[in-house]
Image (tube, rainbow, N blue to C red):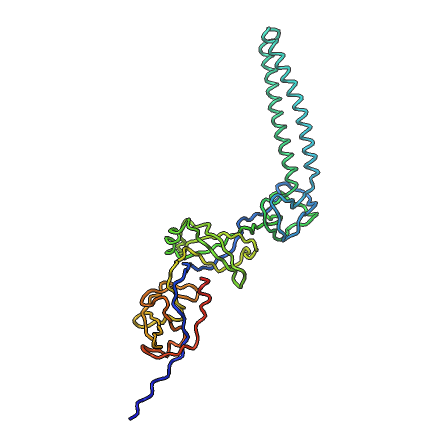
Length: 349
């Protein structure tokens, strides 16, 4: 009787297990927030004479934003300066008179009571002079407040007042809001059990990468904040990354995919995640032997990094592992390699 022909080789796609530097990363979804936000409000009231910027443009710290009608405040300053000059003259005269009465009192030409009255008057005029000086400073400050300048460098939002409007001091609605975009923060949360690992690597250049949801250039920054308590409702800890944001890719309020890189495993054994098969006895991979047969080797997946898995177990660096076609394989099956998997992304880990 003629023996049955051996089954044909199974076509498979293979990749090579390699040792590569692989970063240890925690993934999260974050929210972009400005480093500083300032709501610009008027500290004095008046008619808005000029808006010195266009809404939505970037302004620098100290740049003039608004100019109120300064004439009432300039007049108040002139009036305060005049009162100061009057009080200074009176104080000087009273001081001179007190000095003369002191000499006369020593020679007993005037009574002690008369000298005390003159000295009291001199002290009172000095107090009045101090009050006039304070009034001048207040008037000068109010005149300065009539010109509103940018307290920080950043991008302006919607303009909430127009030229000719009456601006009230310390109104509830700001004139404009400025957000500082460079640098900028991304707020995200990671599971609380990862906190000891994060704390262990503090001060070791923890890298944070953020990519806007929906596409955009990824940005690289550093970990700048760890909250002082775990959120008991979610079991997470709040972190913040600081980014230079020179290209303006991160925008306040937007969502971003965040990767927190704690360290780099310089010699991790990596295979494509598709090569790992979950079996009843645990995970394993099919390795191509020198005789073109497939053999199973047990592995433990320590973690994943993108499309690849960091493994340990019986697999060695240089082994050819099957990444496509495992469903038709069993121990000892003959294989035909139809293609090599694209592992170009492996080098980017």
